[in-house]
Each structure stands twice: as structure tokens, then as C-alpha cells.
Length: 245
Image (spheres, rainbow, N blue to C red):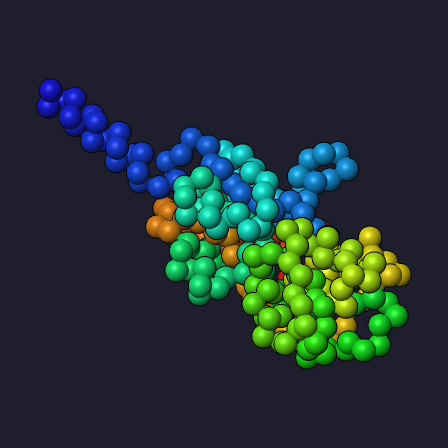
């Protein structure tokens, strides 16, 4: 009976000791955020974040399964234990750190305004006052735009819907993470929309974990190793055609 109790205690300990002991990790990601995570023409998920995590997982020796979902569901997925990791260009914010843990920062990005190509009224974020602005639900952009005095803030679950709203005249402007805005303008939005004004609210992306996850420290070490041995720079150049800061 004593041996049985000891075995039960050991099994409980391993079951509750964090994702470091999981056979397979469940990694949440919002696969509508080009060029960080999206579905390629071959039907496979690709992007900067996808490649980054694949390398990190190899270095720390874990198996994983990607769990595509809306951005708004990532943090709840971590807090409820349905996800072990989440990465989708998630800004590190103090309000989020009250609920979850973040890795070391791995990418610096700001927010950028996008308008129709023939728009001459909006030249900077301050000009969004009294305008209809399309944003992505659950992102840092929502709070920022609301402080600018916009006439209406239209929130979409998918940022491509927000961009389309601008392109078709349903909104005066959209605002989102700079890399994604610029990528859309260069590809699907070419000729119809443009970026205006400076980057604002520059912040860092981090990989997110449930609070207290033992996996965080392992990932941090592997991430720093990638930055030191050049693997991170190679990955950055692959996706952004420039050297990292």
C-alpha cells in the first residue's frame, strides 16, 4: 500500500510539474498573420514564427502540434491549460503578464496606419480622430486606437477583413502591426492601399506560456543560443530580407 501511495504521488508530481514533461506540446498560433504564421500554397503552415518555433523545439528536444485559432483565443487557451505555448506576434504587455508568462523578446515591431491609396486626409495616427478605423479583435491596437478619438472602431477576428474594409471604402483606415501592414500593401493590397505616418507604440513580441511553465526557461536558453550562433539572423533575413536590429 505504501509503495502504491508513493507511485501515485510521483505520477501526480509529473502530471502537475509543467509542460516540460509533456509527451507532446500543443502550440497555439493565429495562422492569418503573414509573414509570421499563415497557410502556404501547399497547405502547410509557414512563416517566421513557425520556423522559429520549429528550430526552438528541435533544440530543446520536444514534439509539438500546432493549434490554429483566432488570436483572441490564445491567452484563454494558455490560462485554461489547453495550450502549452502560444506564438503569433504577441506583444509583451504588463496586463498580459498578470495572467501568463513570456519568453525573452524576439522581435521588435510597432503599429502602422493603412489607408486607401488616394486618401489625403490621414497622414498620421492623430488624424484618425473622428474616423472609422478597422482593427483586429483582441490586439494591442484596439486599446491604442480607442484613445485617439476615432468615430468608430470596427473590430474583426481576422486582420485581412479589416484591410479589405479599408480597400472597399467601409472604413477610413486600418491599424495593425507594421510588418503585416507592409506585407499586405506589397501583395494583396498593391495599388489600392498605402501606409502613412510613423510607427507608433513600438513593443516587443514574445512567446507565451502558462504562468509558471517550466518550459519558458528552456525556450529562453535556446532562443539566446540562436541569437548568438547566427541561426536567428539567418531566419530573419529569410523572411524580411534584412538584418535584425
